[in-house]
Every structure is written in structure tokens, then in C-alpha cells.
Image (cartoon, rainbow, N blue to C red; front, side, top):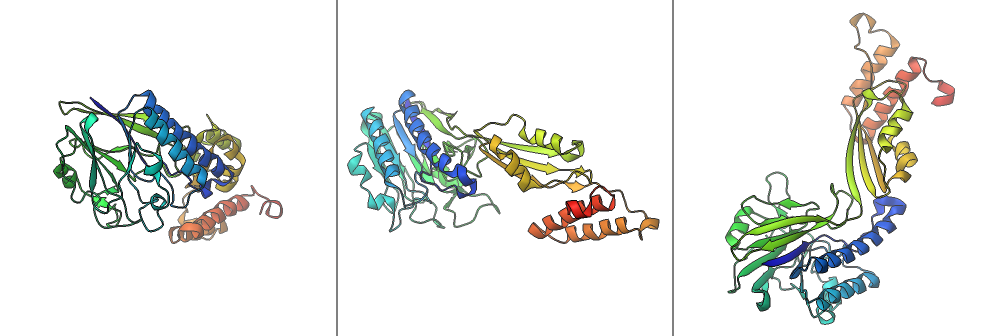
Length: 375
């Protein structure tokens, strides 16, 4: 039985500018979670660790991140666990590559970095294993990272790493290091460790090719981070076990504002089960009473301290009755009709402004706002 820990997209050194003052905290958490990846490999007694690209978020790195990788790689080495790594899209093997500037292999005898332009391989006779890999030479490429991948040794087990996108018609850009299911099948690999997609994803029920997703939450990721523990048996059986090890959790919440009576109730719905390690994305939908004034940015600011990160998107609309034909001349209904046309014909920030104008305008015309105090 061969046991593998498969990880990718760790993104050490990421800026997280969109997280504001939480960015520094998340950068430190990535470092802590990387240590947790190594501890998990040791505790699970795996035979090898595979890092399928984007260990670093960029090729410009602080010395402390370089030292961390060297330290943790050697910790694995002291436990007789080899590590294989490929450069990805963020830390690609271009002229400024971190892997050209730092002699990681010289400092970590147990570490193999695949740096040949074409697919190369390394044999591990004691494990009866051959590992294959190819670096990404740039951020974008139309060349498949699996091009030329075939068994090239007589080992019992054959495992490959790649960083790119599984081809999905009309969804994947052609220059996103695209590969196809036929290439996986033709490779003859027992397991393909993938990186680039920020979620756990199995490419096919028939083929043992998996994305591990990042071990720690990255903005845009829709699940808690983890690694994959992979077991390969001598009979060809493949068992893949996701193990969630990331600290941050992610949750999406939809709130139908037609069921919300007032602003305090809305705030309570948004902040329910809040947690300092929870990233929550809230979407408001439905028709709300005109007096329920919603400002997504103000809600994020007021309630955001209860979460690690809070995002609020307002897709709701103020409730209004149908415009009767004999009421067309009434100011209120004419205003609603005109503003609805404005909303339907606009998008982005212009649409947001028009929706807010409709909301405030109806409330004002209904006598629920004082023009001097509230507008």
C-alpha cells in the first residue's frame, strides 16, 4: 500500500488586499496551515507528499516564507518522507522564478522540483514508485501540462502532478493550461494530483484524477481548506480521502427580505451563528417593504467584526403594487414605472443607484421619510 498526501495552491505570501485589516492575519494563517499540512503528513504516516503547484503566491517572496518551506521540507525529510513539487501559475518557472533564485533542492535533500521544460520523472525504488511532473513556464499557456505524459519506468506505482484546468466547453479559457480527459486516460497513471482549481474536485468517476483545493481558505473559495490522503493498493484500488485542516470556514446565506419585518431582524438573520473564523457571503433577495432601507456596505461595516470576513450583496427590490391604468397620472406610480424601466436598462453601479433611488423615492412619497432629515 502506497500512501500519498496531495496538496496544492497553498499561496504563501498572498497579499489578501480585499480582506482589509484581516489580510495580515490570513497571511499568517497560511503559514500556520502549511505547518499543519506537514504535521498531517507525519501523523498519517504517508510515504510521499505531492505539491501540485502554487506553493507560493508569487515569485517575489519574503525570506521568512523561503525559510519556512526549507524548514518544513527538512522536517518531512527527518521523518523519511520525500516531497515532489511543480511550479504553478503564480510561482511559474519563468526567468524571475523563486525556484531559480533559491536552491531548495540543495538545502532539502528530500525535495524534488520538476524544472525540465518537458515532462520528466523521478523514481523512488524503495516505494516502487515513479513520480512525473512538468513546470508551468508562465501564467498562461495553450499547451497541455499533460502533453507527452506516459509511463517511463518499470515501477509498480505511477503518479503524476499537473497544474491547469480540465477542459469544460465554453467555461474554460484555452490558454489556462488546459488538458482533457482523454489525456488522463492515455497517460496510464495510477493517480493524477492536480492543482489550480480552488476546490476539491474529481475529474471523472472512471479516472483517478483529483484537484485537492487549497489547504486554507482563499477568497473566492467556497469550502473549508484541506488536503487529500490517497491510498494506492497493489491490486490497483485507489482510495481518496479529503481531510479538512484549514482554520477558516466558508458559508453562503440567502435571505428572502419579504420575510423580514425590519432592519434589526435583518441584522439578526445576517449575524446568526457568527464566528471569528467564518467567511460568510450573504445575498439579499425578494421584495422588501419600502420602509426597509438596505445598505449593503453599511451592513458589512457594522456586522463585519463578528466574522472573519462578511460580504453582503443586495439583490432585493422594494415592494410596490401593480400600476393600475386609471392611476397612471399619479406621481407615485409614474415614478415607480419610470424607475423600473431605468433599472431594467442599466447594470453595475448605475443599476445600484437606480434601485436605491426607487427605494428612497417610494418611501418619501409614502410619507415614511423626512426629505430634510433622511435624504
